[in-house]
Image (tube, rainbow over all chains, first blue to last red; front, top):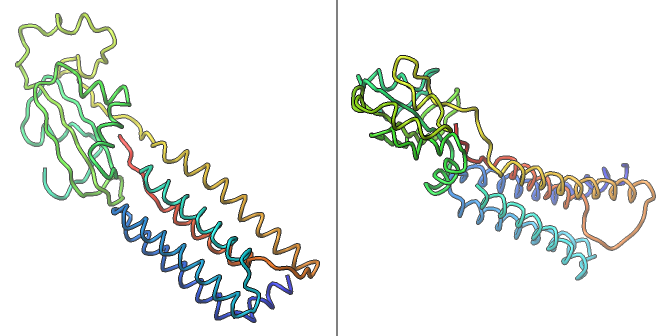
Length: 90
Length: 186
């Protein structure tokens, strides 16, 4: 846990930016709950910014590799698909 | 019906409130659906609501879509009120009802014993999808949490994505998914 906290402390600004992105995405998703297309756009943008955040974060850390980008993209696609399916089930 | 709709304890009060003397009366309610097709599909898939829609005893119908309050929660309601004016089918009340044993007494009985046609809330299949997705996303969040703990505990150097960030994103997905509200028929 010590390493985790040190990691958060070291990259506090990075995590705050990510938190801001995700909270903004969540709020816009909630705000547009009567407009499914807007919700899908919100989810897509949030997932895209998340991948972008990952790329920039790892670039700044000097450990940006294709595998890392693929991992971020896989999680982002999964998250987007989950929300896409849920929105279209309503 | 006005633009501000507050659903009371007795749905059929609306009939008496507006002076509609009914021989038969019934009601279908739906809330929070996004399009008319979904509402109709949900009603037709529910035997008791479908019975209202196809019941030959009803001669008149009123439909309204209103924003209002249901059980203390702001929502959009779709209301179908079915009715037959008192005395309109005086000549043949029993003959029409006899060949249909499946008919419920609400629609078939005269006004003296007429009850209201309300059912408990039926949840949409969305809830099942949500449960499945919560399960899957929950497992992933758990896997990333274990990964963080293992790496932190063993101090393992590695090249991979940031598990904490992955967890944060999946939590966003989980919360956003839980915020999605589906329609329900009542």
